[in-house]
Image 1: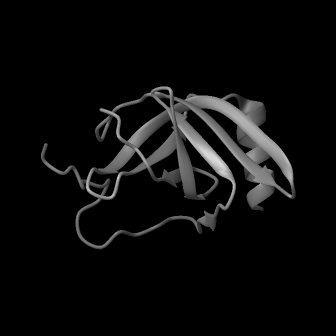
Image 2: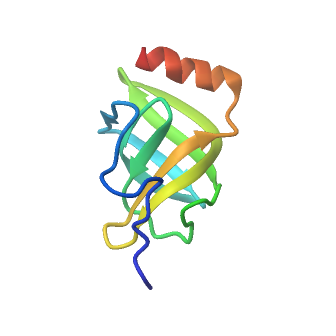
Length: 110
């Protein structure tokens, strides 16, 4: 299978937000738990992804990250912005999210 390393932009990747490394968290995509590498107020990068999603897809996402020892979880859809099949990485943006979850995430990253 060909490697899909596409991103939302061509050329060097330009981040709008600082990403926070994650030592204890998962992004469940297509029913498979993928350990989180990092996340931001708008999205995530996870490893161990072997699913079929490709850039532009919007799979269901169950997201869990431990903040100060407490689990923080939410459910939304992820707009897939990058899949690296060789590294088994997947990156996505949070979409179709409950307002309360969006506010909680924004407050955390303020």
